[in-house]
Amino acid sequence: QSSPEREAGTERFLAALARPHLRFAGAPYSPGAVGRQLATLAGRPVVVVAFSAGVVGAAGALTGGRLRKLGVQVEALIALDGWLVPLFFKPFAVYRVSHDQFTHDTSLPLGSGPLNFYADPAVAHLDLWARPAEATGWQVNGRERTQTTALAFLNARLDAHGLH
Image: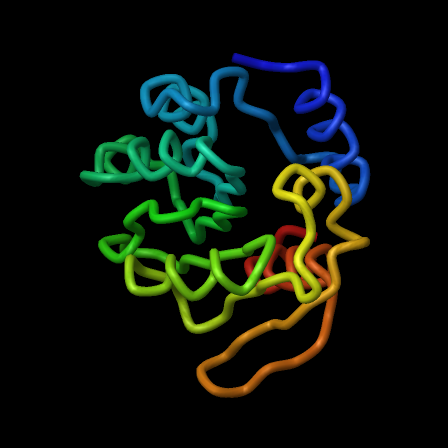
């Protein structure tokens, strides 16, 4: 169920990334709805960015190889606060972005890629989505940590996958 606060956060998130080719799934919690929208992108490289319970919908849509059979080239999943959502079985890059270190630490055993981010100091869950430029913290690569913002981390991941 959408709320005006979440919808405003989504508008701010899309504006912060300033990438005109981003699309928003109307029913992000539904694997079927996410899958149908992604199926329209066959033949193009796709990076899926999902937030909160939307990570469940994205993970469900990306499981099983159905989209690959339809010609959808999923390159990465960026999971923002997908706390405790299993992501270890994906045949593409997975990045976790967390609003605090606890969420980061407790989600990593359920799958992630080599690069992840957590806010430090912690930010409110919805603020990670609505204000990624204000979420300062750490990019984590194994034992190496680099200070950055959630927005810079997201932009670097999108750039790394050729989505300028």
